[in-house]
Length: 225
Image (tube, rainbow, N blue to C red):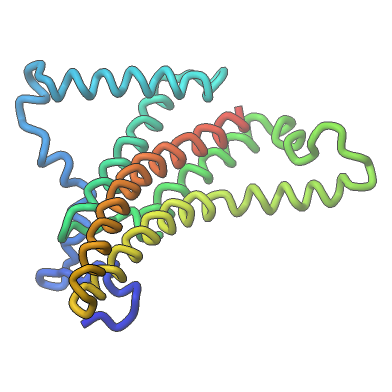
C-alpha cells in the first residue's frame, strides 16, 4: 500500500533483507551479448560511434585537460547515467538515479577530487576564481563568500538536479495512472494520450539529464586545471 506519494520510489523489493532493486544499475551489462567483447557487431559499432561523438563534444569543453583517462571517466559517467535513466522508464524497473544515494555518491567524490587537486596543485588559480575579474574592491569580501558557498553546494546541486528531474516525471505518471480507475472512458483515452506524450518527454529528459550531469562535471574539473 502506498503510504505517501514518494513511497513508490522506495527500494522496497528485497530478498533475505537485501534490496535487489539496485540491480537495475548494472543490468546493462547483462543485456549486452557476450560476443560484444570478442567479435565486431552492430552493437559494438554503434557504441564506437557514440564514443567518438562524445569524445568530440567533450574535447571542446575540457580545453587543456585532454587526458584520455579523464575523457574515459566522463564518457562512462554519461553512458551509465543515460542507461539508468532510460531503463527506469520500463515497468517494474527501479530508477536508481532518482535517489540521492546514487547521484550524491557520484557527484560528491568527483567534486572532492576536483577541489583537492585544485587547492593542492593550482592554489593560485583557485584563489583567482574566488574574485571575478572587474569586481570592485568594496565587493571583493562578499564575492569571496558567495563564490565559496557556490563551490560548496555544487555536489548537492549536481545530485539534486538529476534526482529531482527523474522523480518529477515519474511522479506525474504515477498520479495520472492512479486515477485511471475512477474516470470516464473519454477522460481515460485523453489521459492515455497525455501519458504517451509524457513518456516521450521522459525519454528525452533521461538523455538530457545524463548529458547535463557529465557536462557540468567537465566544466567543474576544467576550472581547477
